[in-house]
Length: 180
Image 1 (cartoon, helix red, strand yellow):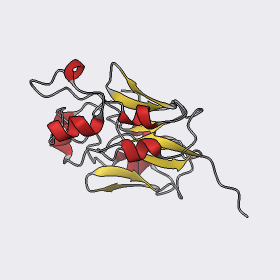
Image 2 (cartoon, rainbow, N blue to C red; image 1 turned 90 degrees about the vertical axis):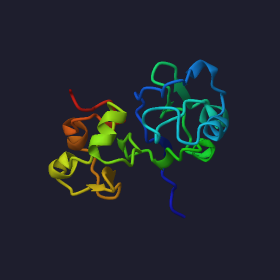
Image 3 (cartoon, helix red, strand yellow; image 1 turned 135 degrees about the horizontal axis):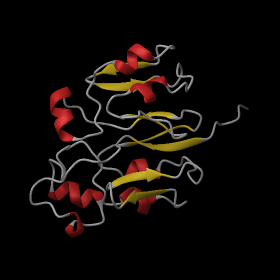
Image 4 (cartoon, rainbow, N blue to C red; image 1 turned 135 degrees about the vertical axis):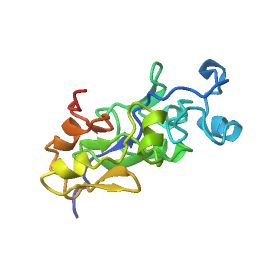
């Protein structure tokens, strides 16, 4: 029987978008499904991003995910995460996936808007510029539907895409990211 590789949750949003006019984060419920029901087009300038209500945090039996109070985005403690996927199921924005723990290079953006619109929506958005594709020595990164996608089977975690991403949308879970 093959040994199961450790898995961890990955949040495909780095946060940083401004709230829409009239949205007061402190007045929002602490439940993302309720936030989404009340605001189906989102609460931030980036409608694709984390709602910050903490449904994923409440769903995690290991205390491995929390909402950063300043960036209003879910953050995973990779050491505490057991890859159960309960946080992913709790996210109505579908921003959380569970991936092999060895895959440390992550696209932290789910914005599906094209470059100029994505650029205006969030300072951390992927704009589909293709820099990541050009610098990846393994051909593991492709821009699909205007955003970077990493093929975990090809990625060797060299970090070139993370260091060269002009928007900081690609992160290395070991702490390497673009210097802007």
